[in-house]
Length: 250
Image 1: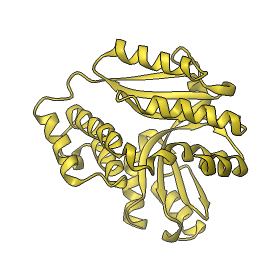
Image 2: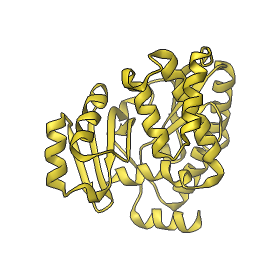
Image 3: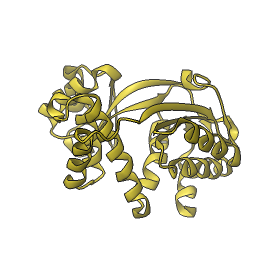
Image 4: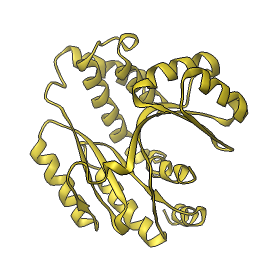
């Protein structure tokens, strides 16, 4: 899908900035603690924990932080967290999914609602935009692991559904329930991935111009700044020209 790289860009743009590093690590810690709490504290026996640890390592989170987060689950922390998904519309009617992990449902709902309102969006009911996305497993590899045919063959063997190869790298898609098995099989064939995670993949997209993108980024940035928010996904589509202008100004 042409829009995928643009859509992924929204998640990585801020990820490159050091100022949100601590906040990012805090979100990973929370996910690791909850994953360890819900299953086994040994990543080898707990697929969700293994994926959380893998994603944290891909973002260069120190090993000590990861181990500390797992220990917190053994000490009984993470008991109070609930996972709640919010759905709404941003500028130009773009669909927005906000995944949160919170120990205070009322606080989070209030903050998310006011963030949408202040930034030209509208919080909707659960399910109001979810139908525009599929829940998928996503595994990414750098371009140098092999050409498109090599990666496609490895992906088919691993049980994946689709592969998108470009100069930037390879994105392998699979059913959400197959992610752990597919990622493990790919690792045996292609080595360690750049990232392995569950994502909301847009099935329809909304075209955005530069002004729309600026407003959308403001909304996404404000949502991501909330400690309760784990991940924000949108279904925007933007031309390379618009994204280049946005990067220049951003």
